[in-house]
Each structure stands twice: as structure tokens, then as C-alpha cells.
Length: 319
Image 1 (spheres, rainbow, N blue to C red):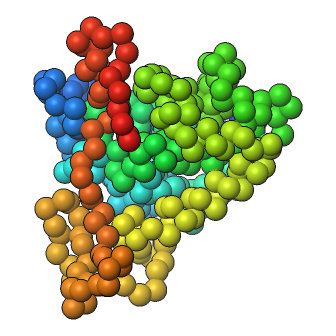
Image 2 (cartoon, rainbow, N blue to C red):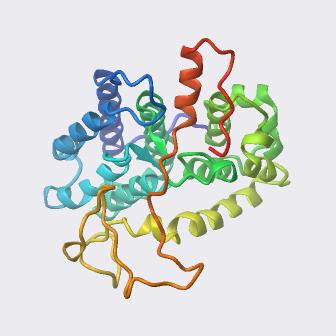
């Protein structure tokens, strides 16, 4: 089923879409501040983030039960990136899915909404995030560099490969056909991701700047791609301590064990770090540094190149 297919949208799904449209308008109303000498995140993102945080109760009151608003709001707030570091990654994306899961647990969404949730709500969320990435130059959080799928997202590849499972003509290798990518990028999430990457990273072929996607394109079927994406998401996102140590668990999404948030102290990077016992690990078992070194976005590099009148973005190694 295509993104632009005629899909039945329930009242609550429409309310969520209206909320995302409101956030898109806020991005337009909060332009980036002058920061032309830097390739790093634009401080105006913090203004947008603060406005969202302050208004989440009002934005969601029409479809989230009042007693659950405070808990559910945390997942939505975290799904737009980190305010202090001005970055975004798959952990933030996972928070949006957790928010949708909470809505299902609360009865706001049900299985009849599944198609609309993926092809309408999630696609609109990705549109919002792409706008934030382009306008505020959000830094990639925990990017795997050339060995990742996308500097920011994972789930569009997972959902996108499932979307193409039964397609007669578009095959995994079709991502190398520029005409196919451009023609169908508005209909299929996987091709939309490839189009985004090709637009931002214009210095070389997909093989050079995205070798993992190039390798995946050798698969014979979308079924194999999709199964691999599911395994990879579990291993590279859900099973990664640097990502999940910041994930909130509460009455709707449970976790047995761990430490209370009150027992931990927030670090300068904007979230909590649990200290290892004794503070000593064997070589190769060091406690993970979740924040790492700030990585400027490829979007920022491309935009600066255009401002300087260059034909294309300058080479961006390993991001």
C-alpha cells in the first residue's frame, strides 16, 4: 500500500495528524538564528523544543486521557531530539513509537488504525523531523557513519521494506535507478529515504557514502531485507545500552530492575548517567559513552557549500 493511498483515518488519528501539522507551523514561525559560521546545531531548536514541552498538555488533551498526559508527554517530548545537544537519533525515533504504543494501551488507537498510524502518522512525523533537521541542522546522535543506514532514522527502512514486500517491479536493487527513486519516493518510505540521502550526500555514489545500503540492495527479495531490518533494529537500537539507558519506563511501559531516576544525577550533556560499581572495567568492557563527539550534520555541510557558491557539497567523510 502506498503512502498516498486512500486510507481510512479515525477521529483520533486525525487529531494526531492535526497536532503534527501544528508543530510544522511552529517550525516556520521559529526561524533559525544567524549561525552561519558553524556546521553544528542551530540554537533556535531550543526555542522550538521549549514551546513543544510547554504546550504538550494542550496539544494532546483532546485525545489523551487527562490522568495519563504527564507520563505519555515524556515520550512525545523526547521524540524530537535532545534540547541541550541539539541532536537527534534512533533513540529519539524510538520514543515516538513508544508514545504511539502508549496511545494504543490507553485505547486511543486500536488495530484498525495500524495502516493509518504507519502510512499517515509516522510519515507525517518523519516529515516534521526532516524539517527540523534541515532548518536547525540537528546533529546525528550516535551515527554509525558510512556503516549506518541513515544519519538519523532507522524505522522508515524497516516499515519501507515491509511496504514493498509484494511489489512486482520495484526490487531492492532499484535504489540504484535514479528515475525510479525520484518517481516513487512520495509513495514508498524506503525510496524516500534513499532520495533524502542522495539529496544531502551528493559527493559520490551510494556505494561510497552508504555502503551498507548498497550491500542490502543485493538481496533478492524485500522479505529478506525486512527480516534483516527487524533483526538489526533489535540489535542496534533496542539492545544498545547507550540508547536504552535513557529510555523512560513507567506504568504503561514497564521494566523490572534498574535504578530510580531520583537516585541518579543529571550530567552536563542533558540526561542521566549511571555510574558503574567500583568504576573499573576490563579492557573492552568500558562503560559506554552515550554522547560521544558532536558530529556536524551532512545537511549543514551541503547548505554551507550552497552559500559559498560551490557546485556540490564538500566531501563529508564518515558521516
